[in-house]
Image (cartoon, rainbow, N blue to C red; front, side):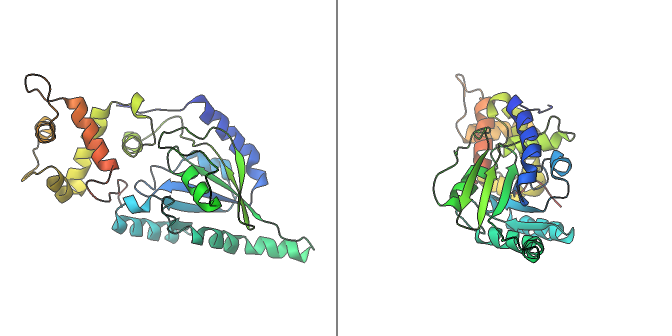
Length: 280
């Protein structure tokens, strides 16, 4: 299955980001800590060019902490500014402004030398749909300013939001990219909720997730679905989970759509523990 989703407002948002770039000092690139590579928009490098950037691995509470540590080390080793955060609880957000101030210190010193008084940092938050931008902004601003929701595509327009006296944030809609070169990227984005479920074949996404769990989180898969051994045949695995969770049609047949929905909801709801789908 090839997963593609590029609504018209995303194309418009890309143009707007490019146009507004000159107004900001720094970019906050919000990523999903469960998929820190798959949730990175490859168009972004082309759009922001040399503008200072901080990568924020959001939803770190939902990600495998060992893998998050490895990803932080990898990004840091590539001379990339990066933080792990959880916008929902506010964990790690205190470091955001401090790191931005640190990165921009040379710029402010050059302005002072010219007699220009420093102003509030102007930052742009960019990221794919449903990565937590609105939740982050609301947490930083201390009130519900930006719309929130776990439906991709909630934020459609740009707005400036004040964060205390030291920062102004420019929110932008989530932007996916027109074509996923790697099919696995599409599955990972679908599994973590970046793409609307209504356009997906959830059985395909569930199959991908079960095979990934079998390879990387075997014991969590066994424990959740009471398996002594994991069946090689994917249909047998679906049948077992369907019966275990009562996903039966009239006559005792397995309801595969319902089974797939339960598997995906279990993963998103952390019923198998914290998981990371981009591996190192």
